[in-house]
Length: 477
Ligand code: FAD
Image (tube, rainbow, N blue to C red; front, side, top):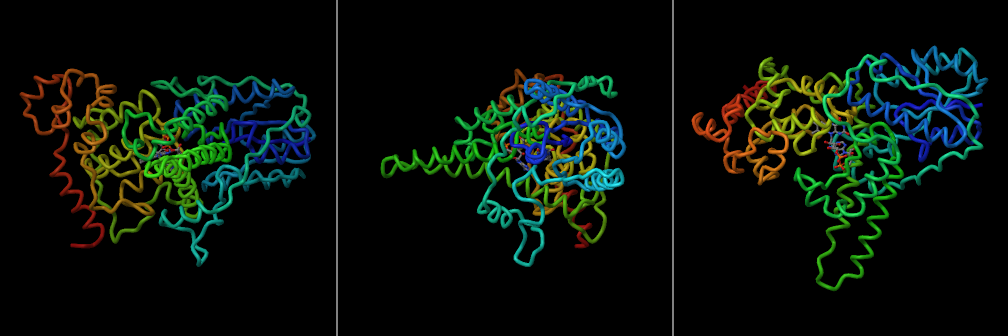
């Protein structure tokens, strides 16, 4: 018998660890609810995970097996399960955060002490940390160079799913409810979980939006992104399967390009597919950054001469969390986060810039809130995104480039459709009034939307303060 320990790989197909275990089969699939890991999760993530586990368990049941569900410390639970099922080996897919690596090395030791073989394999990203480096062998801190090597490197094909014969005929366990795990229901809706749902999202995206991704991805209402982030976070779909679908889309776009009449400018779709692939590479870049710099979860990647003197005003932080800052695009994003456990990428950049550069609040506060509220919270990507916006990360936004929330809203949501979807108080307001909200008088604001707040800070004034704050941290004074 072999145990496959599912963690961030809640799927049966394109799962390298499961594939390795099933070659020696039969496999006993196991999931362990670890209180230490759950302590860092918010309700939307746990909701998605439980739903994904339920679809995974159904898959095993349809294939004559089941999912063993255990609770507790994997260092104790796994040796016990290995003894119970007489398993010779426990296999799992690697996780790259510092905490996970520490825990995994202790699990390895515990299994060793119990005389059980163990194997951890590389699965979650295409190219393992350490495999893409500078010519001097160092990890990259600038994405562009990383991307060029990542793009040109051979990719592995998807791994096949195991046959029913490779799986152990066992009776599994019930899954706990959210309440059993000590969580309330999430505030809003959470995407449908499971491999089938992820495959549908991928297929839909590759039919159309992938070809206009490059042009449309920054516009909130154009529905031009894949919405695969939570699937990739929990591994309800494998990265090789996603990449293979994008390569298929690229091949179709290339054929269409070749058939096009001379002078027909149809090179766009191929580049658009590549633009999407480059986002998959960002995910891998940040995974490498986290692997080589585990301390970034709580520390700035980039060192300044002095500490950044964040102001950390509690009331402003609360207004940001509640979507009550009086900056419509920021408030729409923060409310989308609560309602859907998700936020559009452009708006994530805007709200993160606003928190750090307008409200002068430490990026760690924003990161903690996202960690609780996002279904797709991923340590590497979330941290990378926050530190980029705060100008403290690798390849960061330079400190003097500060997003203007009004012009960002006007540019990417010109008709204020996205804003009105999440900020109904502004329903009757014209797009012009919405994008000029900060310039209206209190009297005008009351006439346009009496329940919507005035801006909590003045962007131009705060921008100057942010510049001073960073210049002092740089030691420029
Ligand atoms: P698509 O545009 O369809 O992209 C496809 C996939 O590529 C995504 O699912 C994701 O896995 C990856 N990806 C895309 N953009 C990025 C990026 N900038 N960095 C790393 N990977 C990327 N992404 C997360 O997956 N989890 C997070 O917790 C997270 N937090 C973020 C916080 C901030 C402040 C910022 C600015 C960005 C954050 N991102 C995070 C990146 C990005 O916003 C989301 O991946 C994206 O919005 C998810 O929607 P999608 O799946 O439709 O993306």
